[in-house]
Length: 471
Image 1 (cartoon, rainbow, N blue to C red):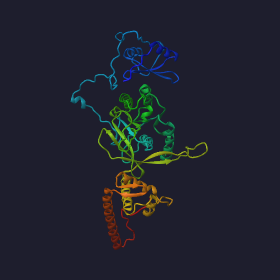
Image 2 (cartoon, rainbow, N blue to C red):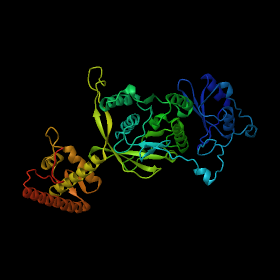
Image 3 (spheres, helix red, strand yellow):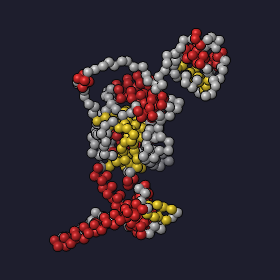
């Protein structure tokens, strides 16, 4: 433990006075007093127990409070016992609460009305959820799509969305949100002036501005959905891994569920450091996710789609994942000063039927590439695409389709790629046997169907489920 620095309290007072006052933050556990002066200057002073008591008394145990120099007084000459001692502070930073009383079993259930789902089977009204994803996986795009569907009352895939008003906290990058919304209006064919979606640009302390937020939302007539983009943008603490500060931040976010309309609150979050698709917990201390009702996650799925499911915590039954496509788009209103298009990204929902079809197609692609690697592992992605007859719209080899298949095979540990050579693992060899069996059954089914067509005199050819196709 670092020994406390013996501070001359008069010198400290003079330091505050010279700056004309400022913001004082007390950290009793760390033994530090932090002065935030006008103009952004910051000074940290370490103090011992006696002076800590005096300083805390002088600032009335406040955090982030503006304190005039004349109100900052503590004398090191006085014994610590002469100074009033502050009330103990809970380690988990729980705010003072009133005793709720004890209710009977009957009183507990009497008159209870279960909350409605905002997004059917996934997110409920009056609940708080994080939406966690790595950069480039579509957090903002998917949340804006949900905002639009909420205002329009349109389902996402086959899941009902509660129609209502949206308040969107655009804190991390308001200009990016604006461009995406302009593009969505063009491609989804809605009038921005007619949409019941309202934006707050910029960051601030949610706890300090809550009364103003509530006043403005009440004027609107309440809200059914609140989106916070992002948690980090509105975090007012000093350390994002502090359980105390992150617990307080989560409780500040939860107050948004008490706004008129009992909105569902979705908070875009960055994941923990070194995250992968299997570890997408929101960044911060464990106290943060403990305060949430669920952690929705977005990961990259098959055929380039984005998959929405949950990790770590979800209050409620499990659900089938939703899938989205991310598309790079332009719009007539998104033109730079030289008349060039300014592209942006928007999300669109993928139907359940399309998701199933893509899964079947992806499995077939993986089997085709697996068998090709078994035959000859020296082929490049382009050569494999040419052999399989996979082409882009312009007729060029569809290397990306092969890349998607090989990436999935590597994740499943069915193939290896060392140097420039592909090979099958032991479980990959077993999978290749199964793939050949599936191909043989498909070919038999196609032959039998063709024979039936020939006997019936029909001229239409039969396409087996495993026939090759171009995208």
